Length: 220
Image (cartoon, rainbow, N blue to C red; front, side):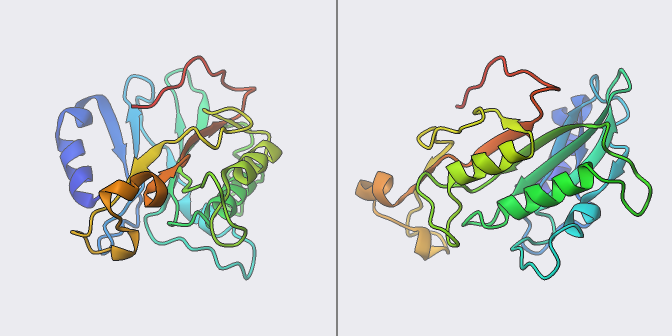
């Protein structure tokens, strides 16, 4: 989730020399929160082959109110240096994570079916990186529980960088906001960081274990 300023800076800086900086065709310049992808040029010399974000957005269940905004989803196809085709996607979820499962379902629907443009993706390898905004202790219909999310991606024959069953205490977010920022509903005292801060297992990379094996995972 980055601003348009980051996209420009990355494209024109050192990252732009070594990586393709891929951003949504319909960028969000108002909220200025956009999902992006960095493709290493030596691995993906031609960059993105096509953007399929609109296909994912149109694959939501009919009538479903999925809390996504322009720029939240980025999905592309790309061929690596050996000609292996990929679907690579990036997504940053809403604060409560209620869009995470619908977006995953929509992406998998697109990947596993021929769409109206006759673009067959069934032979593509999938890499999906996302800020799922999942929670150690979710609340049904209000906050997305991380274990429920784990069951969902396993049902799609996927695994994650944290395995098939994510550890609810494998926190990837540990922060708290002061009162000197506009979202006062998220502010808390320094003595209450663990209790009232955002301390949760939110970030994932999803893939099919038949395509990739996990060698090492770490967080800073």
